[in-house]
Amino acid sequence: MNLQAIMDLDERYYMNTFGKRTPVCFTKGKGIYVYDTEGKKYVDFLAGIAVNALGHSHKILKKALHKQVNKLIHTSSLYYIENQAKLAEKIVHNSAADKVFFANSGAEANEGAIKLAKIYFYKKNQPEKHEIITLDNSFHGRTLACVAATGQEKYQKPYKPLTPGFIHVPANDFEALSAVVTENTAAIMMELIQGESGVRPLEQDYVDKVVTLCKEKDILLIVDEIQTGMGRTGALFCYENYGITPDIFTLAKALGGGVPIGAVCAKADIAAGFEPGDHGTTFGGNPLATAAGLAVFQAFEEEKLVENSRAMGKYFKEQLVALQVECKEIQQVRGMGLMIGIECRSPVAKVIQLSLLDKGYVIGTVGDRILRLVPPLIIDKKIINQFIKDMQQILQTL
Image 1 (spheres, rainbow, N blue to C red):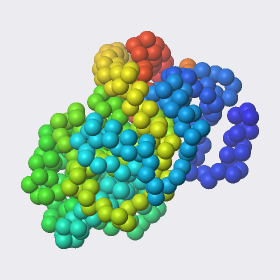
Image 2: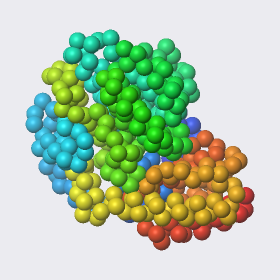
Image 3: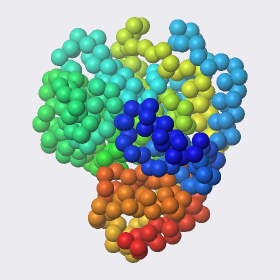
Image 4: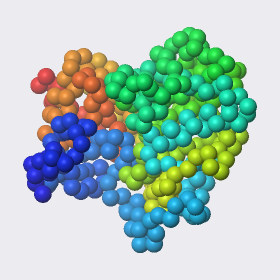
């Protein structure tokens, strides 16, 4: 189908939750490139919103999925699943977690983390500890509980009254956070880099104080690694960059390399809060999704993609900072690894995004001033250099 026919079909039959989308439809991908219905080639600097860590049609992922599809796709968790057990082992051996539960998405993983924190204290005969503190400008998902956890009014307004039990405080303001801690506080939940509000890393000193507070007050620390996890920030998990150990952390996005999967990862004593019947899933951790997760880990190990994310992220940021000196429209470059935000001085983000699309680049925006770059972890210097050159031309025309 041509693009217009697809757009017409979408407008007629699909619920209008995304408004007028960017007018392009991709039909295939290879490596860091995607191709649209007209055959035009683009460099993918968005990776399906930090999902396609291996790029597109990666040989290891393709082989694993083809092999699994030919064998078995779904059985349900009423039975043992070999890939599920192996992927849980792989995550535990590479993280601070002792136990893992698989879901289908980031929102489901965060729901599971919230439930686990609450039931953990319930099972300890401390049902009064049921409140969870989250940060302003955070984003934790689209379910009702995750919308309540998200610290952005625009996502919450249509769904009030919200699920109770969530308290929001400004990021990087420890006094504001400590002021709302009570005997009812069960957990503090945070993204170490707030992606959906413009790639905003938390300050190291603030994070260290939160960790100390959690230990002193018997509060669980939940780190949302949906977007920052799986090599995105130059470490396998972003909490490693901060030198901390969460009680619970969540994964999704890049874990499946494009196949939907989420994970709740926790310390053993906390994970014990879930007993048979307390939580579950029909599709979560199915043979196909967990085969994808195992393939992603295999590719990471064989091709040293976490190391590449760290090296290319450092190089990319250096080149952008140099561009900032030359082009005054760039106000700030921030982020870690290959999770980069570029804040503009004027509301030109959408203009730049469409100009880059015309030149053959797919990027993201946050609001009207911030560009978001989360390319596949396979990116190299040659592609970065060409992007900088084309970005420079666009900024000069502004």
